[in-house]
Length: 97
Image (cartoon, rainbow, N blue to C red; front, side, top):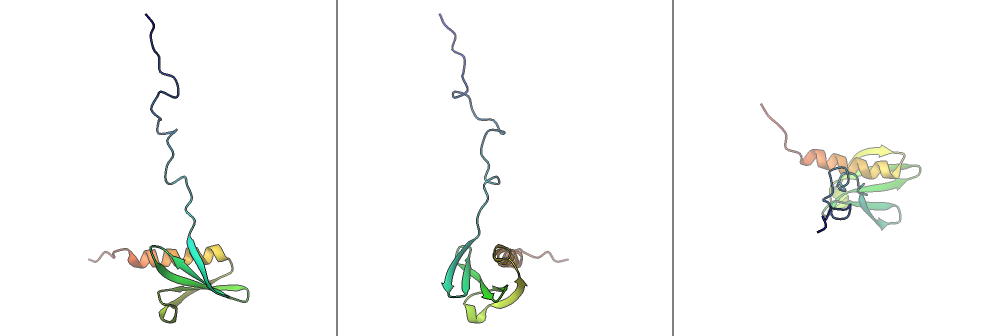
């Protein structure tokens, strides 16, 4: 008679071993739509980043002619992040007294 003992591949993963969604960085989604313009996507277009000399101009809204300028930054990834955060904060329900 032999006793079967579980080995590492037989055991359930612990919380420390299981991969988490938060540990995987999610890249912001954007797409080039013109020579110097990118659309920022989050389940559809939410804004734009336009390259103007050494500055990235951030716009929130869609379509482009109706989008509002919200910021100017010096880093492209920061520009995309700015658009996403601005739109996300405007979607959050506001608490009222």
